[in-house]
Amino acid sequence: MYLTKNFKTKLPNIYFGLILLNSSVSFILPNSYVRGVLVDYLIFRVYLNQIFIFFLIIFYYKYLVVYKKEILTSLVVLGFFILVSNNPSITLLYILRRIIYIPFLFLLFRLKEFKPSFKFLISLNILYLTVLVLQFLFNSNIFSYFPFGFYPFHGVGVRLDYLSWFGIKRVIPLGNFPHPNVFAAFLSLLNTAYLSLFFKSKNKNNNYILILFIFNITACLLLGSLTALLFNFLLVTYFLYINNKFKILPFILIFISLFYISYLGSFKITSVNSRVDQIKSGYYLIKKAPIIGVGVGNYIPSILEYENFIGGISDLQPVHNIFILYFVETGFFGLITLLYYLFKYKNFLKLTPFLLFIIVFSASDHFLITLNQGLLMLTLTIFMHKSIIKEDA
Image 1 (spheres, rainbow, N blue to C red):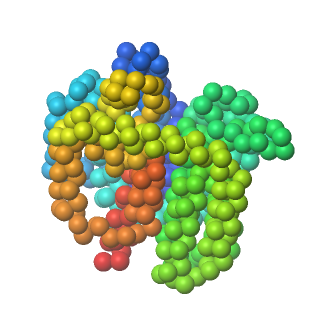
Image 2: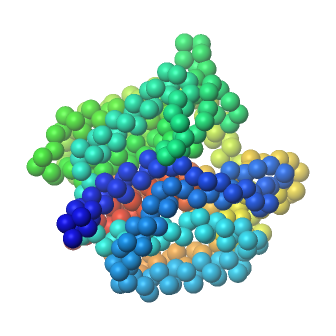
Image 3: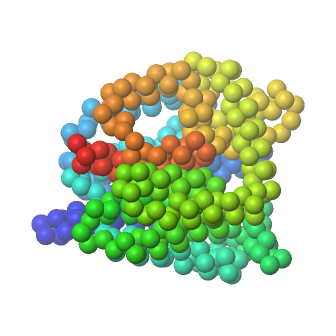
């Protein structure tokens, strides 16, 4: 009994720590190829943290009974998406890789409060910052793959972002994330947790918060994530408006943002152009299937239709905007479904730093719903958003 009770008190730490367990087993299927090219987003993977989540759900299954109606409704909606998809097999595999996060989110909802240990978050933060510095200095992933799932690289390679440092090309660190933007988002989530969960804590140490906050923002600069810098600026502005504290941080963020734009602006022009092309392809696909969409998980295979239309080749990756991606894949039916849930849970439509996190990163990228660690961050963020609103109420 003591073990179970003690285990439940550690669940918030465990949930945050799951981001570390990113090792996976890959199953490359015929549907993993588009135009003869192996597409990473279409590879079926089973992750170590998903296995851990599965056993957590089995262990605490009785806490999910109260949400059986919501879970059943979600399964029915997903089943419909499979039936109307352009390629049901792709949609089925896409959903199977992500469906575990539905009961996982409801399991989080059963916690009375979500307060990870401040010391644990600091330790996790320092660990990732250490990895970032070592990867930058050694220009490689430097770590083994299991159980942390570090992506292998040594020097500049194909599809790896890099910057020039004293005339030497250095790969932008990945940590154990698939892309630097995801790494920056995780550091931004830690910043959000510091200010949101511990701002009113009697045991907080503002100096530690300030130092780690600045280190994380500097890391986002090194990772080349304009989105993360923008989010952190908005985050500080949000707390400055509410609490009227930490007045120096917005000026630090502005300075870092201007430095970043002047130093790496030319590199990001290519990224912006790529995003514009993706929006064009998304608009074309919406016009082709406005009612039910092209099918959940079918955005990349459907790019072939757009390529035939323009007579050229496009990047085989999802549009960097979750709202557009969702509309392309589910059409007006998906939009109506989303509006139904928003209306049903309208009491939770209140701006919090966690909702701000979802909005900013959803508007500029897709990893929150396409990548495993992104889904883990999204699940945690939704719950922490709900927890703040519940406390305020």
